[in-house]
Amino acid sequence: MARMHLRKKGKASSKHPIERKHPKWGANPKEVEERIVKMAEEGKSPAMIGTILRDSYGVPDIKAATGKKLSRILKEHNLLPDVPEDLDNLLTKRERLKEHLSANPRDIHNNRRLHLIEAKIRRLMKYYRRKGRISEKVSL
Image 1 (cartoon, one colour):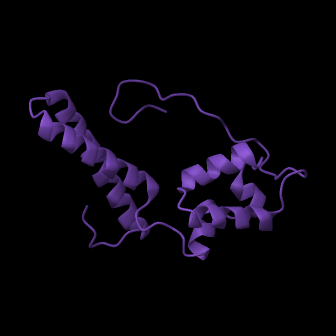
Image 2 (cartoon, rainbow, N blue to C red):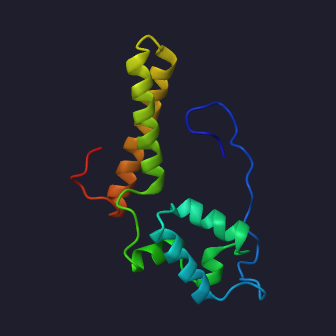
């Protein structure tokens, strides 16, 4: 799949196994869910939780292991962040770029990057409003 604001192909990434079954040697669903809740309470992001479970605990797929997606588990335990992680990352990137542009106002190339980031933010906000993940009144 292509990148959003570039004329390039996307980078290759790992693929899920064809069979979405949890390996027999893997941890049982209760243990996996407890680890997820513990890491979320420590303040780790959902992406970081998935990476740690994959690399340290040998859980290749959370949904195959527990029967639920990571966000559903976090929602059940009231640990889901108010702002989705991808939107939060874009907002952080926008703030860093605004700081850079205030120090370097003639940097026209990064000014264009700021416009593209803000377009991505608007697109994601529209999506999350439709899904009901964020309220209609939120303006970031």
